[in-house]
Length: 287
Image (cartoon, rainbow, N blue to C red):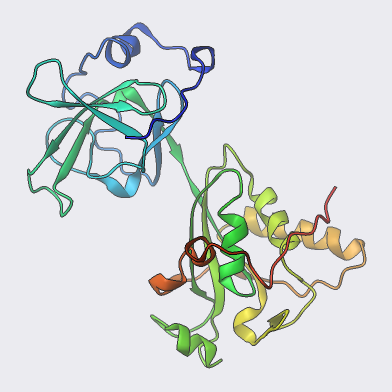
């Protein structure tokens, strides 16, 4: 397995004696005692020692074993090595070699047939937030947001209309009311919603109505779908700032509704194609 460059030890978080017993000396916490055993909040589980991302909450399941269980890790986040007992497979943080626990295969708990049995004490939890933006063709919007600091995941889809489970062809017919939208899952400890909203305005022409460059139609409108009053207030403040600068802002602010994921061939389009957007480019407009 390809190894990531490890962080310098001086950058690691300080550990309590109990944490050091498990993370460094490969101990095991008592079953059913860990704080993440019954933890069901949506977010990201990271290494307690170095903060490297390890598991998404979507991969967590209840195996009844007494420790947090995951059926998948974040790609390249976890290394597997033969355990000293010669029978089990140990799992380690790929970034700092912190002991996490053990992995077991073939038990049939989930379709992935894998159980990462992890000590709660080896992890920290980061609640993640979501933001939704429409700024023209969602291929180009995703291209820029996927590269932004603190963004953990991006998904293109449809939002703002009435049609349930819309297809791309239906959205392009202008009869659904949906915009091509992007769902952004981000770590608020690394990037603020304000920073993401500013990026949104910098990657498209927010003065155009129902179009973006050569793409014309209501599905290409500029719109922010806010998930909280705090997000709405932040967007309103940025729009007021842009208006004061002389821009005629066409961006709509709408409370987020159901987000419908687009077809698989639309996801990570430019990454798969190995090219850059034709209708989006970043232009710095904020100090």
